[in-house]
Length: 229
Image (tube, rainbow, N blue to C red; front, side, top):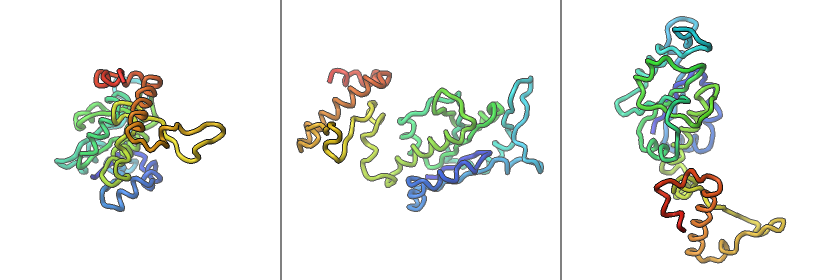
């Protein structure tokens, strides 16, 4: 997979590119990732990427020239172009799974009060990581990139991502490790029983109970059958 991140603040991504899952995937040739400063694609020595909105209003708007110029250089016929903005569709694990099957993702990071509306005509979709406002789309781009890369074959230990929260429509069941008892709190007996079927059933019950308690909104139409467990 190839990921291209278009931003006006490429310095945000230095440490991110060195994180284990990203760097390991790059070293194993599973991933090629690049951070592109779209200020390099605007005319003029000041590399001005923002301007006041027509019609008045507070704040500055990202101009269409630098973003579209950069996009036209980077994009190929197999690219999937995503603009990260508060008004986009809410990002989910299901969407991460879909994007992990793409050959080339282009993530465009917003800033200021938003984009010149003509930029939207050049993207395939818009995404938001939540109903709140960030200073820029760089953190959102990291979230999307990390969630996608960790799903690439070989990025994690085989099967590690299969039973995580949201993969089955439920939150993940509680997990424990050594010591078996700590400050009077013991690991549930079933987990050390060696009975794999009982463990499987316990985990399923606990996942459903946790979801009902903490995220009942996840129990939609697809999980109605699980509510009777």
